[in-house]
Length: 128
Length: 362
Image 1 (tube, chains in turn blue, orange):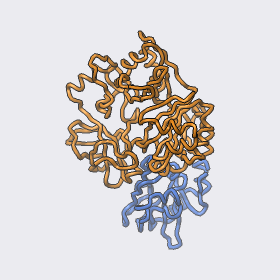
Image 2 (tube, chains in turn blue, yellow):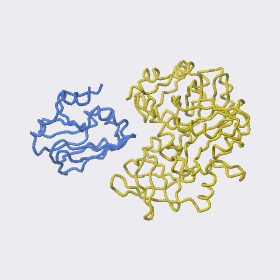
Image 3 (cartoon, each protein chain N blue to C red):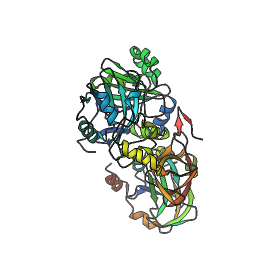
Image 4 (cartoon, one colour):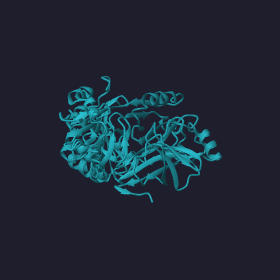
């Protein structure tokens, strides 16, 4: 069964977010999502500085099997993207909640995170 | 997955090896056993095994078996010079479209034909309908399993697992098969590597699988089978060709035996007309040297005319994306692909991309 860490928040398009101590938000895709995609071969992350709105396309994950859009779970400006994914896209498979993170946001409205799914609700969604 | 999915005799072995099971043409088969990329690389560098028991094996007997096949398929079984020799061919409809692609072996009882699983029902109905007027019997061998063991070390590892087959495996020529009791061992495959395809009684299959596992042959799923065959420039039925596509537009021109002109195979008249007019489309390989992955169905543009990607993937061997495409016959060295809304330049190359572990296109 896929891991669903209790301290993260989720959305139904299978991204996770983590609220960091400095108020920024890290975004990635879930273990369930990477498992469904299979081996990841390219990750296209958003440009640093771009303003994303919740639900807007923020990038693409390409696996051997399919291309899948990544959506921004909340409104915010892109502060950083994961530089390791350029050379090691497989980190999304091996460590989706850690080294496979995708981008970091300065949230425009941190309260939006409260409206996302908690681990229990996301587990129900994926039947875990 | 539907509970009605068919299981091969190796289903329990797939579960034991950690296979992720998917539905393929009504069969419950492994897409991978953890990582498609690793399995792909193992076949290119060592040895992997595929359960292809879902494929349909048909034995042909009768005085007219040869004449029947000379009408049924576009290649000519008269080329089969000795028992065991194999031939790749298209089975066409009268309009010159491809009903299926198949392999036929000359055997001492007549012929053995292997067709695809996804096309089984229509193939068998068509093959049966064409027997009218011929003394030929079709015997569907659902009692057989099939394992493909592929890779540079495949033959050596099978020989180590089954020492009684070692001498035979050593002596087999490429594209030749030999019956050994109830088994049939052929040096054929769908990966662009050396290797074997072995048909054997269902009851023997699980033990043989476990022997191969013990000899260090890696279980390999349908996912790697697809990326391996794509790198090898081999067609997949229902994707690179179908009943609406001529073999001349699907890279199968080499499988059409035009001579002797008197051999009236099904589809011949349509193909001759197409050849005389000059085929409108041809099959090529595409290489994307920038980031992204070419996918089936994407539009290819060449000087305002369009074609289509029929199979596309990320190539684990070449570390970039490759595709098989059907494009206007006048296509040169470059084309443009609509890659998720972005017009992206690609190189046009001659297939295949990879043979025996190495890049072969220029």
